[in-house]
Amino acid sequence: MDYDEITRQGTVWMGTPDGIVANIQEVIEVYPGLTEIDITANAGGYSY
Image 1: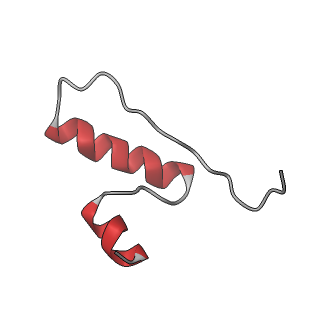
Image 2 (image 1 turned 90 degrees about the vertical axis):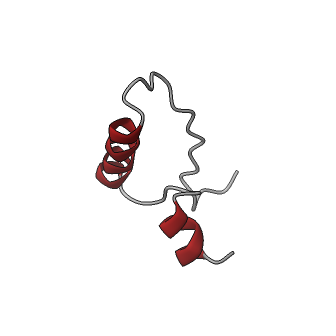
C-alpha cells in the first residue's frame, strides 16, 4: 500500500490536529454510539 491508498481508505489518519478531528467526526457520524477511539501518535522528526 502507498500513502495515498492508506489515507484514502481511512486505514491511517495523518495530518493536522484539525484534520484528525474531522476524521473522528466522520467516524462518529457513521457509528453514533462510538465512545472510544484508540490513537497512536508519532510526532516524527525528533531524535530519541
